[in-house]
Amino acid sequence: MLGEIKAILYPAYNVNKTGNVFILEETGKEASCKEAKFEAKNEYLIYKFDQSIQRDRVKIKQLFPFYNAGNASAMCDYIIFYKKNDSRLFAVICNLKSKNKNNNSGQIKAGEIFSQFLFNTAKRLYPDTFSSIKLEIKNVLFSSIRLYSNNGSKSGIINLLSNDDVKESFIFENKCR
Image (tube, rainbow, N blue to C red; front, side, top):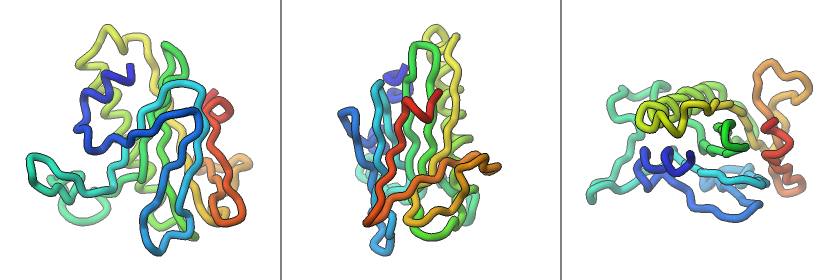
């Protein structure tokens, strides 16, 4: 299941992490939320799209070069595909923000739409593998201060703290039920 998704995307966007506990990083110099901690019991696949990559010796600066400049090309920091079991696949849409929500909702929504597009492409290309699989989406924001209420938040975004004093983890087994 994850192998089929991995076969669809250009490999430079893949983030190679192994193990049950892993850290995803924000490399911005001004960022006060520099990392997101995850704990997983099952297989996962991580993509980072807000970066420039090389393809055929050409630097690709825009993820969606067919869009004009502006919010149309917004994207979340990471998409993590998590295989819960043989019939359930989660797309965890992840953003790291310091102290404000700046375009967070738009970036999260773009990640949701793109992960659904990837899943639907996998279903089209590998119908036997994906015929009984359902994609479920979870949205998570790591921030240096609390930006959303986690108690019945209407936003649907799980807000976890990550700063010098507190490092909350996204535990797949607890959040992906």
